[in-house]
Length: 292
Image (cartoon, rainbow, N blue to C red; front, side, top):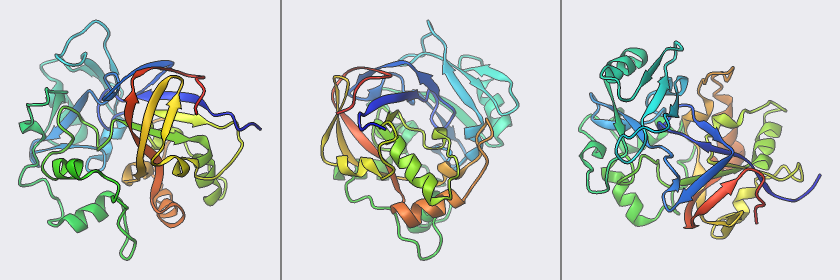
């Protein structure tokens, strides 16, 4: 075992809440990995951009970018639907195909300029439960008596923006452009669950950091408020990531629904796993790069 930290995996998610692309190298700008969450779906009945927290069947889809195409700020994507059929974002039937596959009236949206926010605004039907407290409990899979996730480190300007919009303007992120997870945190959670294997795809990180098996504690917790270097790219570690129901949902490839994961993270990790980051110094990150 060694305590040398390295980049083990890099992930980009062309469509918010769908299966992503594993990369050998990523260009990282101030808004994260190039073209990450370049597309999202909008629930037209609710009048809101939605993630798999609201529409778990989105996780049964996957997406990849189509090289050489142009949808404005991002390339077009090819989406694989739950039945294995495929549809491209420039197909005139794409919204109908998505809606039929998911069972909701959905529209597919590419990333838009910062000053175009109407599609991000939360409609009157956006709240399913009728109150913000019960909505948060539903989205995070919390039982009665379990504490709400800690959002105290969320910057006030971002909190205000997310109270009005479904994502920070010009993006489809939940809050921050980068999520970083360590293999040690996965081992910690696996140990709390009696040795159960947990697929990294449940946690949807941008970067998975390997420590060579040197530890099995929640290593990222030590990095909050500090700067992390992946190769020559610098990230400001802002806060730990509160984990929602997505981690327990079904995904392709034998990833079964398992609500015990949520119960364990709430009990043993204060519902926090991985860290949210801003990009301090852009550049290129490659699998195998050292992490400091």
